[in-house]
Image (cartoon, rainbow, N blue to C red; front, top):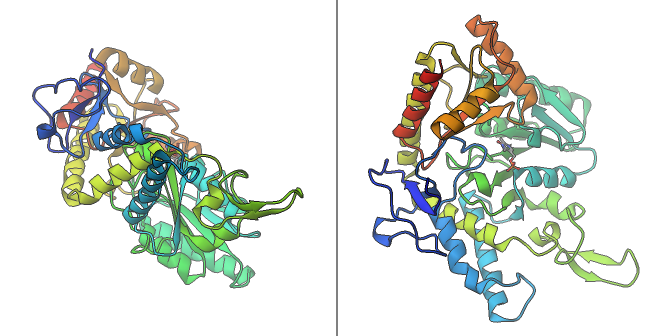
Length: 435
Ligand code: PMP
């Protein structure tokens, strides 16, 4: 098996012949065949685990390789390397902000990942904020919040809108209009891929004087996210799910709460001045307030490169292609005896390229291991860091299918830019063999 920085596929479709290995020390393949949205990988392995961590986009690897000779301190040096690195970091912030549709007065803060971004926001909400969320969230959007009202998992997007509206009406009956409320929801579920009606939920939140944060960890890699157009107040994403695996995430949104909050981390870079007395500190405003310490320049630049490539791509075409692959996957899975899909909403509800399922009578961890060892297919098994939702959907799947032999954990296949029909078919064939 070759292990090298070669693109395994491009969105244009599968490649008949494996591409040559990239020159040592460079992620670049031959320029004439390079597609901006190629992803790197190992040709013989089928990666169906994009929802956990997407492969690296060629543009991300190239942007890092190009910057590396110039790598220097950000915001901390007068030398040419430092100047260039600082410029690259701030340009990356602008690019990522544009990609997410930020408003002129929003902040774009680089974090480690979505978990870090949501924890930052949880620390920044004004004292006494009530946070309203749904029980189907990823743990990263379920656990960080103080003072949370957790609404039951709805059975349709329309039910989610109704439930939020009722909950906020109740809350406003008991609190004055100025009391801060933050609604926080996922853009797309990491368990089912189902999309949540974030624009409509934002409108409901604002009607009741609440703000809304969207966990776009799974949505942003698959669909444009424009927070000014959707009137979303905060958005969180992870670089490693957006084809930029260099350890960066983002929290973007309204500056006022962020500037009024205590710094997320205390240290260099977050201050305007420090005196000798222990409490004599003037904290910076703006993104620097929450980015103390030397920032992750390469992560920011890699993420910005992907944002640029996606912004320049035909997202409608990418969407169509992904939906075709997803339909092939779901149709194939549903045709296999004993396979039951997990879902929260109706089977036809819009979703991104993620599908979770169980094989009746088979332990999911064992199936995942068989697929990996016997077929070179990588997917995820477990409860996907969304234990309440996954357990509930497993119980519903048992009731819907009438089977009493479903395992207690599930399997999840997820696709993205490098996925092909051949990958999907290999999984379906392997599952058919398993039976
Ligand atoms: N939210 C969702 C919907 C996710 O799928 C994930 C990752 N599985 C996270 C948040 C957390 O992302 P990260 O691990 O990058 O912090």
